[in-house]
Image (cartoon, rainbow, N blue to C red; front, side):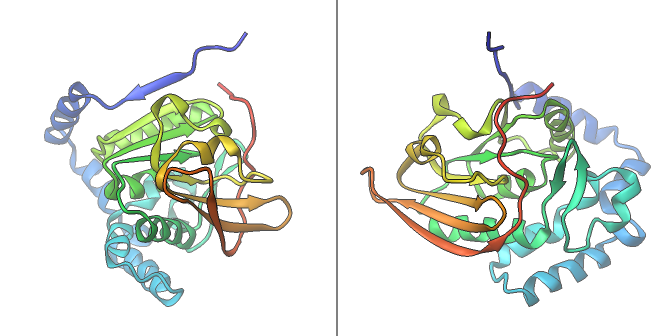
Length: 250
């Protein structure tokens, strides 16, 4: 028997609690957000320059990457590597995506969409891509199959006072049909082929950004043609993501 999936909504009560939390934030908590040494603002600036050198041009994305404290999404033992442009482990066989890829996928989604009132993310992970994407959308619906990762992401989103995200513990390959259609869908895990379930949850002219493949993966953009069942597919560049797996874990 399938268990009922867990849905977490950031409500007005959460916002009020967040405000109280901010008023009571200690000096140490502020210091952790700002970062020191290898997590300092200067280190973040060097990362942003590397993103520019690799071709990221959207100034809003670059500014959001500059402000986002990536070290919060890692265990403390790895925080000194937070602003390297590389993927890093977050446990449960998952990784914190490479900053370039996070910025690239966000830039592609922004550039290809007419509106972004409702956006779906497949693979919340620790919440890094979630936190960036939330800056550019009305409401973000994020699905994660691994409960401990979702719980950690929830805590960080609260800490960062990001209140336009809904979290869903479920198999990401099926998307979130009850909340669709979506103006855009972004997947942080790679299926062997693009799931029809995700394409059918796109709104008219909706955009899907997804890595596709097994041994060799390609970042792919899919655009729905109006409200038809026709889709335009474009290969963007080679990538390497964790596979999109079925089932959920608690």
